[in-house]
Image (cartoon, rainbow, N blue to C red):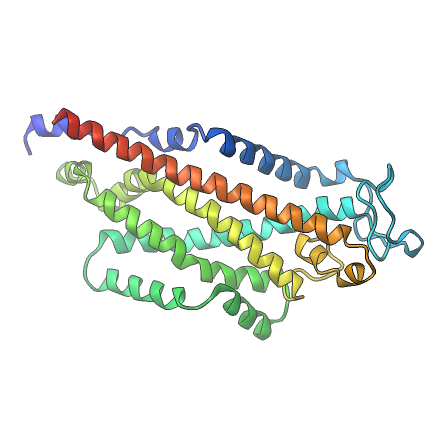
Length: 300
């Protein structure tokens, strides 16, 4: 390749990854990000925000309404709903976060290898992804819980495996698109190793897309874990968790559904906020790349 061609084909700047993540999310994205930040802060500062023990029962104070002592009232056993909601944010967020981290740890290396290599290695990864993709995540989680017993660890492990194909397909598609870019040929001609190209350049450039998909996966994982806790297969009562709070059937039957309603609303709002932020992160990258592609065509 001539020096003139190498001068035209440049490796994307290193700060592009962070610039894409820090780009403007728009009003819906900013509102959603602010709401998610409040939820995270509430989970971290739970002991300071509500000194009441979320698991302390007092049958004499069951089904109390909103008051200065109990902001959101109490449940069927007299436990403070606000305390359970705030402390429940910890398990409700840590579980999906563990699922996403485990799924990314598996899918990113597999996706990069499948996109970069040819032949039987790529075929093996794609077939494995297709096989796991065919199994519904909740079904896999229920089977795992049936074998190893109910609990957060079993649910997280099963859902991490179930969500790996979703992220792997995104990584494979985005990495294959990057592999066809001219800067990869330039780096290869310069003698840069494939591992270095994948880690330092390809992974950085597909980072915003992967982060956007991981955020969406976080939302679906939160829903699935809440559903498993509702069924009694995830987080176990009396531990504070949003899914456990929604499963309080006795309160609904006794015409006191405030805990179920409040926890359901918080789950829905959190999931919607995650979906908006994830779509904005991924969509922003696609829009930027499309605009850059149009500018290159106009120059040529």
